[in-house]
Amino acid sequence: MGWDFIVELPPDDSDSSISYDKRQNRLSCRVQIKTHLNSDKIRTDLSLSAAERLAKSLDPSFVFVLIAEEDNATHSFKLSKCYLIHIFDENLERILKSLRSHSVSEQPKSPQKKRITFDPKTSGQDISPNGKAIVDAIFSIINPSMADYRKKKQDQLENAGYADRRFRLETTITAENPDDFVEMMLGIKSTNLVKLNAYESRFGINLPIDRLNQNQIIDFKILPTPIDCEIIFFGPPGSQPARLSASLYFPAALVPKDNFRIIIKSGYLDFDFSISKGLNFNLEINSIVESNHEFIDCHNYLILLDLISNNLVQRLQIKSNNTAYQSLIFDISGHFTGFKTEWFEYLKTVSDLANKILSFAGTNGNMTSFNDLDLHAESIFFAYDCIFNPKNLPQQKLLSLNKKIENTVKSNSDILFIGRVIIAEKIIAYACSARAFLKSENDKINLYYDIIQYEDINIVNTDDDSLCDFINKIKYKTKIENSIVFNL
Image (cartoon, rainbow, N blue to C red; front, side, top):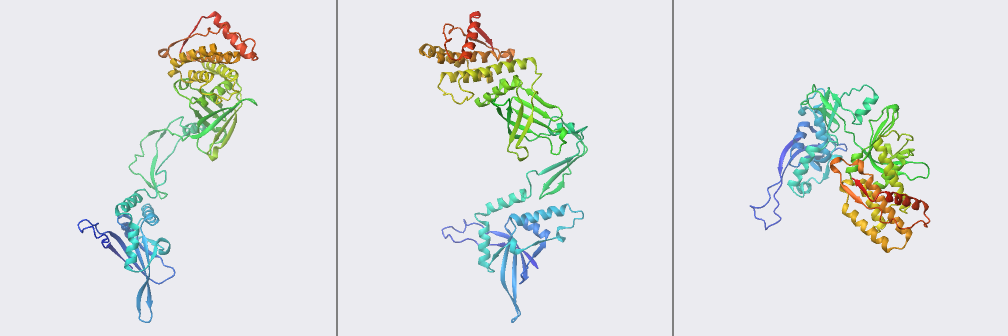
């Protein structure tokens, strides 16, 4: 049997310095009392409507289970145990889940006619069956304050049972063929949704949202969640691979193997790979011009352009932390052909620049070995700025570098060092010229760059024949042109 009570706890008069007008109001709680004769297996139940009242009140709510023992000699009863079932956390969630489940049953009855059962030993707290022990237990639960307790319970009432995806939409997507479906799942193509069913999911139980108009036609486009990954382009054995951070997009699982397709986006490069059509490569020239890039990205980008422009790319590897796609390898040899003329011109131009940097900078491809104060390093870094950040071309820095190079050459007798500095300057000029056709008409500036001031330097006796050959070619050109004007 059971009774419902609103119980007021005695006021806290432990602090005599607080006057009666300032002491806290009496704390109250809701209690249902259940009494059982002594038994090893005790289960107590109450109507779902009574449990609902206990659950939805922000006051502390409890079920007191009193265990009585019969004295056969006197035919009287005495309390032997007391269990305090606090309607909070798991106990509160059990009631809310039961109410939710009852709402969607095929033949729902009034909550007054449905029962919910608790095992006091697992759902409750065993306390001594006396007033002080009960009051102490309640106060320990309410601490630090009633306001904090109410806030926590309100949060549980509003949010308990909801997974990450609170709402679910069911519809039928019609695709003409598997490839069409894959494009929808990758967000490439939109589709019309006609039959819509929306649900709110709580405790894994779905309730339909009736206010949704099921007859309306909605243009729907999926926005797939990308997977962070690293893409690695491999050339011939022994060549340096290009590594780029990227976002990977996969279609839905269980797509037929022949229709497998992925999208890879890496800032300025887009790759569309499918089993049936191979690799489609898209170089976004505008994004290269308008974006800023880290130095190491620029270095890898130049390596990739060198591989692409010479049609040397053989394999693509995709690495991610996603367990389903930790390492994928594709043979993509022969796919980088047939570019637009201006794109190919750009690739070849920058590829040549990459070769000059890697061949003549004396770093063997280790672009992190420079000292930031080294003039040669400054020139190389500036060359990268010319290539990748032309919108913000630091023209004053260019003039300053010119002056530094001139002074360094005059004060240094190391012919090979002077030759490397000259190469750095020529790379700067080369980088500037590579930008000309990428700039819009409204964005052109004239940059005067003198490249004949070192014509009389003799470096024929150096050991680096390729270096000499390259510089002599530039010197030959400077005899024809007094100066070069680059349109950026």
